[in-house]
Amino acid sequence: MCEFNMDTIACDGFSQMNRRRWLGLSASAAVSTSLATTWLTLAAERIALGQTRPKTAVQSMIFLWLQGGPSQLETFDPHAGSMIGGDTQAIQTSLKGIQFASSLPRLAEMADQFTVIRSMVSKEGDHERATYHVKTGWRPDPTLIHPSIGAVLCHQLTDEVEIPRHISILPGQWGARGGYLGSRYDAFQTGDPKFPLPNLDRVAAHPKLNSKLSDLEFMEKNFARGRQVRLRDSITSHQSATDRAVRMMSSEQIRAFDINEEDISVLKSFGDSGFGRGCLAAVRLVEQGVRCIEIELSGWDTHANNHELQYGRAAILDEAFAALVTQLQERGLWEKTLVVCGGEFGRTPKINPLGGRDHWPHGFSVVLGGGPIRRGYVHGATDTTVEENTDDKTEHVSNLVDVPDFHASLLHAMGIDGNLELQTPIGRPLTLSIGKVVPQIFAS
Image (cartoon, rainbow, N blue to C red; front, side, top):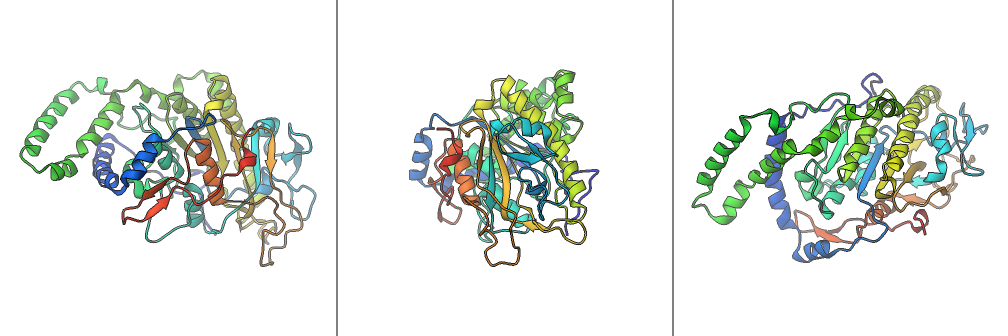
């Protein structure tokens, strides 16, 4: 059984990202990036640069990550009144004949804006391995670290964003990583937006910084003089990382992290939680063109006292998710943003002796919205006759969507061809995805 702290919400506290650490990590990331560039074949680079995004592509992704395994039965796929439904009550949604759990009243009213996949399946039932699987689209491989979906987006799509393009808010212990693409594509981690970014004030607030940067530039030029080009490029590539850090600190876009600029009524609509404030920050970051923002809401691993704990988490999700959709729509960003909500797996139909539900990767739910996603659609179904002791635990799940297909569909929504082939650090050709796009979830 996994443990979590309901007071801190996150499974593992995030490390404070101060200016010194940011510059240091950026410097090391630049070296990794320099090496990673050589791993890509020339052909793959040409394909990537020449890739044309379809008309349905969107500019940003928001991933509402529900760490621990949210119960489909207490959220988007209730079977109220059945043997597996437990104490869950169901409510009618804005879609005829479709119900959500009573824990999600606001989202139930918005169901006509979403695609709900009720038939997700995974081959991983361990938290760490399943999280890796859903975030990357690949099962863990001891010889390779695959990039998360946000890292792939930032690698494949270009823009002029001056702040980090891949951001994780309230990250837990298994954050989004750049994998074989290089640490440059790791998510920039930050905490509750209620507090300002620590030690990342704008350059204007530090008048002596320009003088120090000039001194650094002088030293770098002298260091690089007379050295072999390849050696110089690999050793001094941290200059570009320093430039990125300074550009961030000099940019007006950094104000996107400051949710206190919003009207008090907007702030309240997201709820008084770090997750809610993270969702509001995500809206502001999308306004600046940030490619991928992940906001984590943990506490879903309910091996005991399942109903009460799931409903408590769902209340936070319901308020924040609904406000997120409202603000994206009001600001004209809904069509430009892909919103994804889900966790690493679901919970068992059977309730255990402790009143909990255990891990269940054999038919769980995820929700998609925005961009080219089909509105008011439910894909797949589970039923109440699930027998956990059978060899095929998915035999009562219709229209299965496995994790690779899910990832291929996310890439497609962002205008990226999942069949694009890159080379890993050991020279192994590897496509971005091994799945197939699920056409039914896209608007015609």
